[in-house]
Every structure is written in structure tokens, then in C-alpha cells.
Image 1 (cartoon, rainbow, N blue to C red):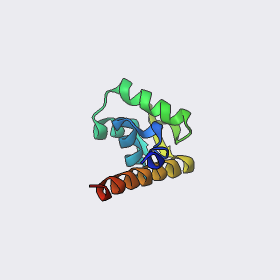
Image 2: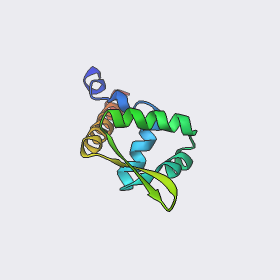
Image 3: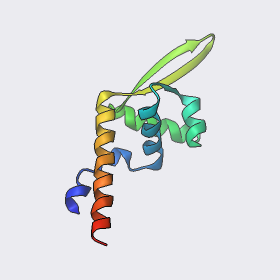
Length: 102
């Protein structure tokens, strides 16, 4: 079992970060408000998790103005997509391992 735990990525341990990456794996780009509403997070909570994923280079941030309003959108990087897929694979292997031992 320890072998499977080694592949669990700590960057995705929180529900918020798991949710952010799940949304970004399905949608090409997502704006801040959509993420906030979808994941039911506060501005500050979402911003801190987005910053952590950005620091890990798992997502790309784009800021622009739409009309006179600022809009921030997020997109998973290739490294982020790969890391998230590896994390999900590790979780799946851990679950399968536990089921076989029952």
C-alpha cells in the first residue's frame, strides 16, 4: 500500500484544489466567478488555492478587461494535467488495492 501512497500528489489533497483541477480538466478555460459558484468557495479561500496551484505551475492565469471590468481566467497547464492524471491513477490503484484485500 505504501507504494500507492507515494504517488499521491499533496497539491491535490484539499477538496478545493481537487475541485479546481477537476473543473479545469473538463473546461478549457474558466473564470474566477464560475469556479467560485461551482465549488461554493469564498473569494479568499478560492484565491489561496488558485495561488498554490499557480505556484506549482499546474495552472495558467490570464487577466484581461471585458468592457471596463477585469476578468481573470484559469487554464490547466500540461504539467498540471499530467500531475492530476497521475494523482487520479494513484487514487484508483489505492482503492483497487484496498478492495482486493477485503
